[in-house]
Image (cartoon, rainbow, N blue to C red; front, side, top):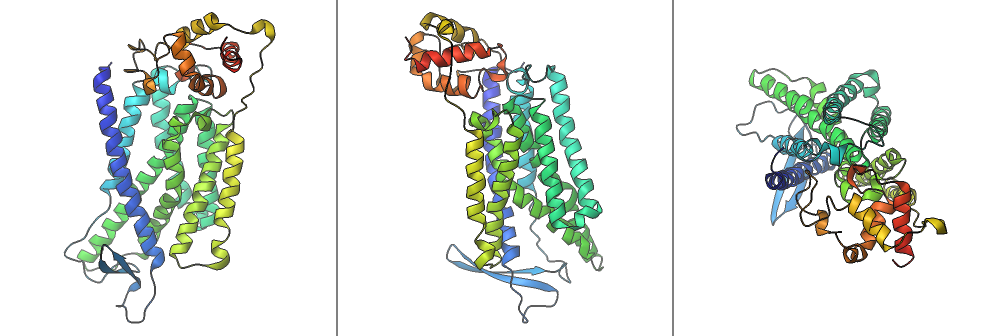
Length: 397
């Protein structure tokens, strides 16, 4: 087991790298999608040019052109956009190793959902990344891949199926992160195995004086469009661990579906706007997104009513014993849990005064959403959760 202090520095370093690379990748992806949609035809453009777009930024004017397939001659300097995507995945997978593989029994496994060993959980995780790409890629290359709407529905259902599977195998926290990681893996594989290889074939053809195949660019555009529409849902899934009401729902795999729908609708608005669309084409997205978001909020809202029979009501001594049994291994000055270096969020629950101070957090994390204890390693029962919640509701007598 790696030293906790070093593990925290590793997590911080890779998390920072993940943010930097992700911002760079998303920024370039959004810009090039905007550029592609903003292209305007012009009879004065050179032969083979699909369209052009004028841009202004930082006090300068830029004239961008896109060729239908490729220019007649290979340019002297060609800028590639790939390392942003690669480092986003490398840093993200490193975080999964540091947090969810090394700390599998705490962050990934919930024995109430499925009694897995650490290596079983890791093996299923790695296998899911590989399998998800193979299945997705096969559908893209199948006849259904020629119909954008049909393929979009298939991809949506595949992600929903993955979400259903993960929520019946891993802890709620681990399941949601894995859905985001699976989609992120597909997105990066699109770059690594389709977009960049196709571009290399086109460049090679130009160098050899041959005419590149038009379908190579079309394939790259299709995968790039998928990446564009999946970006916003993935971002929410990757930060879901900070919001237990998202992943603690009994049917949280449906939450994934709603998140994808909302994120996809929002992206469609901006893509349509970048194409210069107006009127009815831009009138439905925000109202539709608001409706689905309202459904999502209602769906994941927890019931704050905690009912306990009078004979089962607990006193301060009972609650203190429960918290010390199930929470203090992490929430202490010196946590005894091997996967925890410092009390999460700086919350210590070693005394009755601590418990009263953080009562709202305890209510949300352990009673209403059941996100804590992590993976329910200590086996906190439903009776104990309700007893603590009722004690807080009664004013902590």
